[in-house]
Length: 56
Image (cartoon, rainbow, N blue to C red; front, side):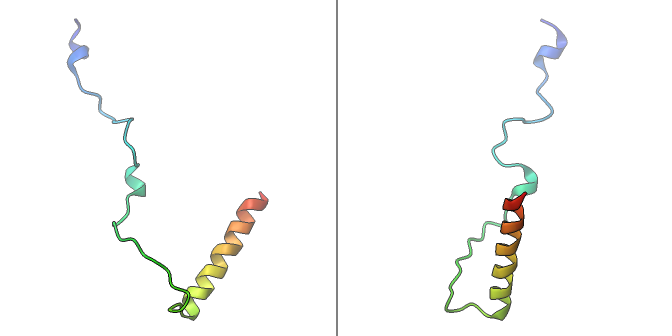
């Protein structure tokens, strides 16, 4: 046995969620009835971005 066999790995390659993708844990539900003008603009921008992404 060499001395390196007892060292723990520095990086955990089996992590389920990368640190950069962790959320604040708040689940938000969208209601069309309660949506204001800004919400509807954000939805339109999101749809346009999705279409641009799908075209590539």
